[in-house]
Image (cartoon, chains in turn purple, blue):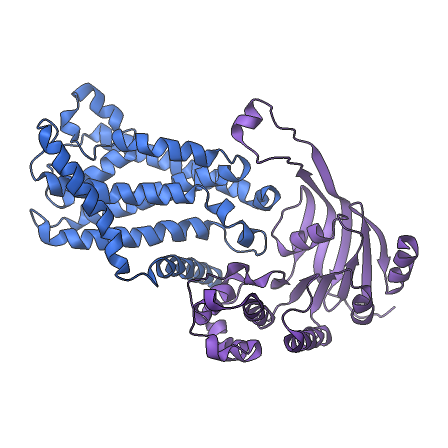
Length: 243
Length: 250
């Protein structure tokens, strides 16, 4: 054990998350007349763990085990039913980054809009504007409205904005690399750079080999509970059960 | 302090997204926003010519000053009620101040309202009373935002709220003195009209341009102000309680 004082980046304390199962659109009429079933579903059951600054954590588990829910809670998009969660610094998630784009606005205007959505300030975007365009490789198209972009192009722009937002905590969900072969390589390199920079990274993936080479800690989640939490060896015991 | 600034930046960026996105590639874009109330004014004004009891002096101006704020309110409100659900792809993916969505929608419409009033300036009967004009602008902004927050927050959990709101809006038009004057209503009932803050707001818009004498009673004014405060507080409270769980219901 090292004697270094570790700083907490993310802390989950006895987190439970309950969802109401919906079979159709929820309505007031349906609720008043009890036409709708309101079954509950426990996505997470009393989970606690702490992630320290600079740790690279991979979360594994079968589909529907609660992995994405954990990411959503860390990002602050969802709120736990019970328990406390705290994070330190700017949290940015690399999931469907083009969600905030407006088709009628130009690439440039969308950079500003999306930059603000991921939590950058105007001054910060001004400073990184050229870098963002350069990395995305869309210089020629930056004055065109976004509806003229292909889906690969908007993905690239979205990714470029997110990685330049200088996050303290980076959340990766499944789609680790985006776009064509060339950009995929570039984005993997960029993420690897983050891995080396001492930022905290939490990734959810079924790509176990990727997690094995890039993470220092693996948390195995199943049925809303933490099964195992430890080094990369967790992947091996997970594989044993799965096969 | 810094947080405040980025909140304002973000809300304004969304507002300009709304405004720009709507008119960017439409030829004569800004004409469209006046064309609608103008057409309404002409049609209603001409039809009501045959019903002499309803028309007031300077009827076209009177009508236009009622239709402008009404359109602002009804367009904002009917679009806002389903806004959180419509923007679910954003809400599910990113964390940002959710109230900015509603605020930017109402602000972008407020911008249109302002443009509309600029067009009325040359037609004003007296010198324009900027105190009541600015006051009414703020008032209608607060009320529209408050009621929008309330129903849009509930609409996430109860999707039939949007049907309810869209059914109520055409009815609301008739209980607001837009095509008729408050004075045409029996005095005993007049006070009831002030339960609807739009009655007072539209009244003050008209007063600003000298179209109507100020006949509002103290009770009427207080009633409208009180309803506005109550609705707005309720809207903010419900929004604050519900917004944490928006993602669960998307």
